[in-house]
Image (tube, rainbow, N blue to C red; front, side, top):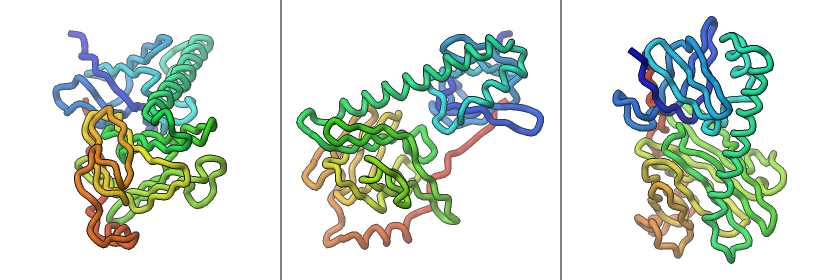
Length: 276
C-alpha cells in the first residue's frame, strides 16, 4: 500500500550524525491539528521537480513546496548534500537548487506585495508587523515604508530565557542601518496565539499588524489590546477601534511593560512530535 502524502510548510532539513530528517508544520494528517509542528523520522528517498520535494520516510511522504521553505533553513547546502546522497547526478541537483532559490525569492516578493497592499494608499510612512500562529515565536516578517523607500525583512532575534522567551524586531542593539534602524519592537510570546509587546518604537508613521496564519492573533500593545483575525491587517493606534478588545490599563505608562515582563507567564514553546 502506498504511503500517505502530507503537506509540510515552513520546512527545513534536520541533520543528525548518520541520518537526515525534516521538520515543519504538517497539514492533512489526521493525527495532528492543521499546522502542528513535527520532526519526521529518517528520509529514505527523495523526488524533486522544479517546484517541490517529495520526502519519503518509512511510513509517510511529505510534499515540501519550495516556496514554503523556512526562512531559518540556511543557504541550501543541506538540500544539495541530501540530493547527492540520494543519488542525484550533479546537473540534476544543481537544477533543483536553482529552482529552489528562485521559488524562495518569488515567495518573498509576493509576501512583500501582500503586506504593502495593507497600507492605506495616502500613507507615506508605515510599518507592518506580520504575525502567524504557524511560527514558534509568531513572527513572520516586517515591512517598513518611508516614501518610495521600502524594506522587507524576515529577520528577528529570539532571546531564550529561563522562565520566558522574547523576540526583537528592527534595530536590535543599534546595529542595523537604513530603515530597520528606525524601528524597534520587542514582545513576549504566550500560549494561545497571544503576544505582549514590551517595547514599541517607530518613527515611521502608523504601525499595522497583519495576521497571515490560520488562527486569530491577540496583541497587547501601548495602544491597547487587539485581536487580528486570519488574513486581516489592522492599524494599531490610540484611536483605532478595528479589532480592539480593550484600552490600556487606566493610568498606565511605559512602566507597565516592565511589570508585564516580570509577571508574564512562561514564553510559548511549540509542541513538537516525531511521527513515524
